[in-house]
Figure 1 (spheres, rainbow, N blue to C red):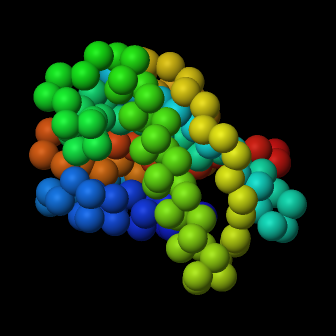
Figure 2: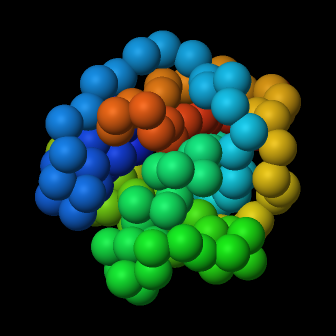
Length: 142
């Protein structure tokens, strides 16, 4: 499941942000805007997908969609929810097309602004310049 979310995030960087990117294991150590979406796999299992991005990454998104050069925290929080929806929604379609653990998605929830200190099973961080977005997945069935 993390593979399809990673693919969707990379696609977002390539097709929306249109910047070079790199990928590393683990979570960012930066102060981030954090949202999550709960996923209901068709096999009955439940997962939580986190999206955590630094303000620089989310400002790129805000510039792209809202044409704002300097957004306030409320706007960046809203953009975090929208980005989570776009990425996880895209990952859902990728999973269905590949027939890899298809799932349905719930409403995104904004968690906080701060350090990513949540339990997770798998995580990747995608870097665009000095900006970062972390995707993390937690199995809620344990």
